[in-house]
Image (cartoon, rainbow, N blue to C red; front, side, top):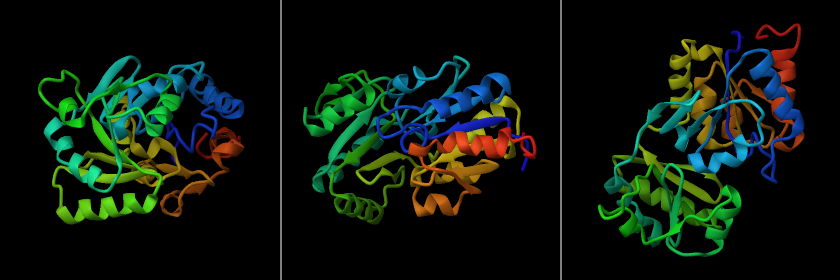
Length: 275
């Protein structure tokens, strides 16, 4: 294993537990890596920037952030990438989302838009800590709205409905968007080619290191690109089978301090070749 010079981590199901908290063990391990060993840490998430504030506040050191699976990347207070998505592209998929009885949700850099205040609206408030805007998707994606957006997603408690939506999406053949599950209840639509692997490339280049020097943590299918692109991919025990299959190592779950246990074994250990 190459020496680790950058650590990247997904958020939900990886960095935080079911209560939205970073465990003290994981926080201490990441602090040791970032502050004592000078290994930069990057949060790589599908979330929007405003939705990462509650995570950053739990850390006592500076972290890079990658939002929308790599469409927006920031390190050391500098914007490294900012790729706003064409509203027309996002608007194309709205009728299809509705057709399958799913709830659409739009994200700008620091805000979010839903059409109604329902259970999904309340859930989003709990996740990010503040209320977004209520507006018809057509209005939000029109020229009269001055908000810029990065992605749209569909939510449904019935995973099969989302599977049907994805199959129909693929049958139609949207050429400028691709669809990826970020949880059993969330199907995200992003510009074609956008994956978390982009962040590994972008930050490695920014730091002047090889992607072989990157360790990445993830748990779900939308983490697969990042786990493959990094020199060493670590999947959580609670991860999907497909995410585990592409990883170099499977650690404990996000509820059982999986990040700290992997860092202790693979990076901090005196006999580790990557320390």
